[in-house]
Length: 335
Image 1 (spheres, one colour):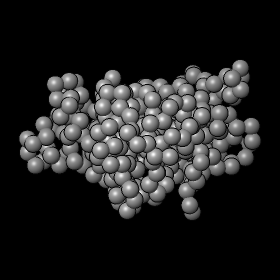
Image 2 (spheres, one colour):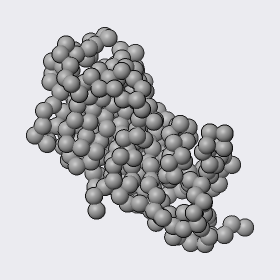
Image 3 (cartoon, one colour):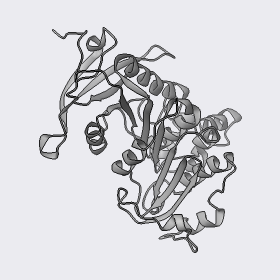
């Protein structure tokens, strides 16, 4: 029988019903050969504070040899557009364990193909509820709660930073969709178009109500409020040509932040230059010529606005876990 009152893996459990709510999964992350201690991955169930439904997440606890309860960072990782809670990002999981972080992977209503998913208020609250659940039961450092996602997870990362900026110490969004209506325009005849219409109630222009859904679920509507969050935005330059999300989505998201801070956006002419097949800047700035050993890719554009930055790198529709973690671990939220 499980002891619901013990300390687990060196992390203080503050709730007495923790193990009564956990479904343990026989799965270990990392290995001694790679210098990473084993960690336990488990499925949890969190009750939605909006509709009372039971929403799943996966939780990975680091192996901490210290029996104390020193607060540790929490990394919240978000699944991609068509995926759900069963998706894995093993490299990100490994890095979280290696850094001694708690790793949380919420469902937030699963694939973006129905009204309760795709950036809905319910989906947003599911993420916040899952974070609250972990904070109540483990010793989480509130100054180091991090958020990241790729593609549809990048969309949701940007949306959560814009809608709930006070919750995050830093965030990293990769190849994310920032404007659902414009994304529908290029995917109207693909499954992504079908999914958007199922989520938002129709096509853009069908009615004011439908248009409002596209607008409210789009990060561009909210990112003006994200100025104090160190948000890392990144996209591979070939995305949109050999991938589903044009780099404009990432650059437009950065520009909303830059303009809200009264700083210089990426110009429309620069966006056009980079958006060409095999696009390059005609006149790159000094910041665009930097090298980033952790990213490990040629950089075509890198700009800053307040605590945030944007990077267009040599690559496609992808995320680079090591670079995301490198960005996040630099930031501690001011008390």
